[in-house]
Length: 410
Ligand SMILES: *[C@@H]1O[C@H](CO)[C@@H](O)[C@H](O)[C@H]1NC(C)=O
Ligand SMILES: *[C@@H]1O[C@H](CO)[C@@H](O)[C@H](O)[C@H]1NC(C)=O
Ligand SMILES: *[C@@H]1O[C@H](CO)[C@@H](O)[C@H](O)[C@H]1NC(C)=O
Ligand SMILES: *[C@@H]1O[C@H](CO)[C@@H](O)[C@H](O)[C@H]1NC(C)=O
Image (cartoon, rainbow, N blue to C red; front, side):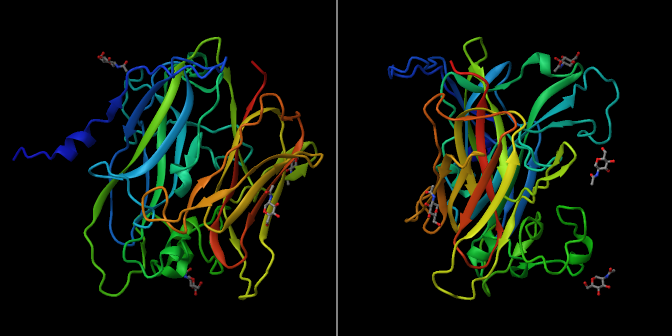
């Protein structure tokens, strides 16, 4: 007894690295904040095996304490030893960091059976229906290369005591989906969650409901619902490999909140959002993902365009924008109501083997930091999200624009 590996010790301590306050070298930026703090955390570990999907939520994750302004949130998959894991071994479909208010159990004497009972989930400022795409940070395979940094003096405000209801604590959860594609017959189809490549339970189509709450229907060919926790993508005959433990390593930088910070609002705009009107009310209907139809092998087939016209109740200055898309992505563009281009995000495809540059995978989505004050969305303006994919059958495609808006300039 008593044998604890070094790896286990490293992973059992949740806060792995709390670096001393770093003083950035003066870059001459007059808004630069010299008191940026930084910490790297490791999520709970989870086990995967060849072909297996891990779809998990970890509650009450480590997060900077107090009233702070979050400047960046970067994440990647690591193994038990803390090494970066390449996407072709374990595909990071997505991670979502989601905010919630949990009952402070110290103040209510009763401990409920379900510790999650009474949680109030706080969604971002995006317009999707109910609880769809609620996260404040979240990307997928492109996470290693995609910037999340908010320029000074802007930040995502967190832990403001006046916004936390009495008797509650503000907490964060991580929702992650990882597909272990070692030894699979077709890695690409596994990462697309193509249903006929998974060993699905016999009654799958009868018991599974889609995003609209209705039964999936047998013409559902692929996407999130075929990538449920513990389902397995089909393996090459005779392939064997040991299970392994993985975790999400995430680095957060932040500042203590003060009058110098300007809060930003974060929106996820989905190119599948079919906005309807009922009188003066807008009804959003985000589908989260979509299928790119087959092109029957024809060359020079036009790209698949998915477009949504989305009214922005409250506008603001665009501080930063990027996008989340999957393999096959060409670009994503946000247009203003008058047709002006607000920004475009483009993918970078990997060319090598090392983590962050895996051949054929989207390893980065470009971001846009417009010159401060140069791009403004008006209150009530209808913006258009346009995402383009190469033609050819593809399931589980996503087109999410990420934008940070602020009410004022420094
Ligand atoms: C909860 O109550 C215990 C005992 O009174 C105390 O030691 C602890 O600090 C409290 N925790 C919180 C989060 O207030
Ligand atoms: C399940 O679905 C199949 C075909 O879609 C159908 O034939 C069968 O009756 C269904 N079973 C139940 C229990 O609904
Ligand atoms: C439209 O709004 C009216 C009044 O609020 C409501 O009664 C009705 O159910 C709504 N219709 C739809 C389709 O949501
Ligand atoms: C997006 O990609 C299309 C090719 O399908 C190209 O014509 C267009 O110029 C690109 N948009 C931007 C803003 O780069």
